[in-house]
Image 1 (cartoon, rainbow, N blue to C red):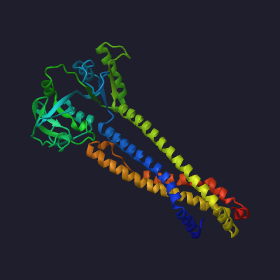
Image 2: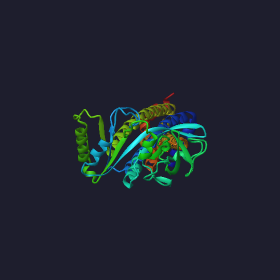
Image 3: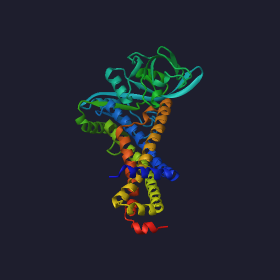
Image 4: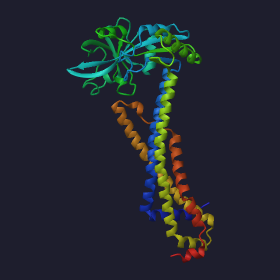
Length: 407
């Protein structure tokens, strides 16, 4: 256990070499800041994925056509049709299904044009529920679409805001031009967190078909919900089997695919794990470099203070005392680097979060917890301490006679 005088001596020596100490701390806090930034953003994404999975529920699946590229339903070469919907509806164990049209449309206001995705959907209670689950959003104001709404529209959140899609936002009851036809706005959805989804346009199936009456429409996807999630895999297998039979296709040569929400969640999580892991690995390299720099600083410190070590030993300082003093010095460097790194990382990520929110990318915002701060601080201290272990042991083994003669 170090005495107060020994601790004061360590702090005095660190301050006396403040330029070198600062450069050592700099190398540590850059690494800690980098790791903090990527872990906090990673935690934010994991939190968003968890929230989406809980909102959507794991008892659902989607049917989409293969190929085509881009958003589903935009290429009529690859189709999901009414016949496919009927096949899916007949599979035992499915409680509800909802086909969706997905198209691109031109929005116009005051001679200014913009483009957005349109989602055409049914208006039954179960279909509206599946819309809400699929998009992970609820109605913010106004009302949902209902049967017979051929000239009504519900808009995404960004249409409320000024200077987002147009210079002036919309209110319920306003009119909006979609592909040259006028619709009355009856509601707005809550913010989802990304500009694309928050700019969506929602029409009924019949309104979508009237809007595109000059072209052949096909569904972008079918969303299905099952009674018991335990039977989801077997139900999905039945859907695939029945669709193959209906389309007269061999297994492995389908022009469609069926995917559960759980599979989508797992695939996204796996990709996210790989990306975050790779980035943190790169950040750890910078921490290793900082550890080497700390070790170099400590070696220089020992060389400079060999005569002092000899004096301390000659007046009774033990090997353990000398060792602990140098370990304390390296751990202080690591701890200060950790504190500054955490503070800087928090400032950077908080600023980035505000910018992302203002740009409509709120789902990318970082997330924090107490374990992140404590863990990275302890990590910085441990890195600093380990960097000085060998040097501290070597310093403690200095022969006092040789040390006093050292020049």
